[in-house]
Image (cartoon, rainbow, N blue to C red; front, side, top):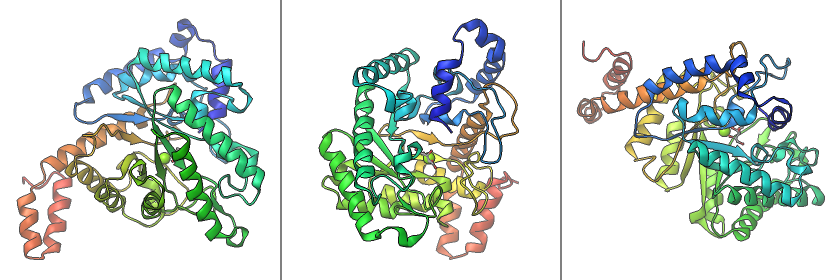
Length: 385
Ligand code: XLS
Ligand code: MG
């Protein structure tokens, strides 16, 4: 993923439509045409610019030509997406090198682009984990100067969010954890995290903070590994109504938990700010696979819990956080976004056509063998046979 990539593309790529046409416009139009057929009213979808990537992984270089960053915004609507997820430096590349005036100018520029494209900024997240000062975390670092940097960066993120008319700040607490458990005092770390959340609430009385829990990667053990931890922090904060969670499917699975139950927990507390739907094939690195691609039944249950609880009716987005396969050719590569959204739509249909009366009968008899079969046959399209 990449701010640095974004920033570099932004500077290096020619902007003319001629070049755009030559490098991939035809492929984009094909993708867009297919997606319009799939688009349906009811849910609003979002993704972040980092979801259109150059395909690098820790074991090799980029495998695709960079797609000019600002041209990514033109892809959203045709693909059926209305919301843009941002890191602070997705809005203002090279953020640390920019003056206050330059930050304002660039944010205004992005705001205009969003307006022209009819897009909504869903959230802004401080991308602190790229900076050398956060090598051992920001808010929870043992170093006072690192913590001071984290706070300065956080304020900048909030300012940038407000400049583009966005009030949601996502905290993915990337390096707020440890590589070896003895490295930090966990009790102190939790106090510091809560203090940072309170400082943010104080700094801007209109923002909401959505904590995105993840149990590991890049650290060995993260301090806010589950939505339960995030919601406990919300209640402990000075303004619980303004602190919520963002649940990513793969992050819940990495914690060994069922994503739909995690979502249900947040929904029960009125604290599901957003979701990052994707998938994960077992306990390994954070894969960000296409939604429903590995765990179809778990995906059905996630869509069900969202649908049953009116998720989206308060303007919440169905966010995706999916990585394109490194092997996928094209420029830009967007099939993973289109296909994940498509699976979401299919699963909405599956949820709506699911026979709840039969389910109630199985539950009444406590015949879970029968219920399981009922679900599986429904997913396979065999229940009408
Ligand atoms: C990383 C996270 C990250 C957040 C946004 O694992 O999913 O991409 O969604 O900072
Ligand atoms: Mg995410």
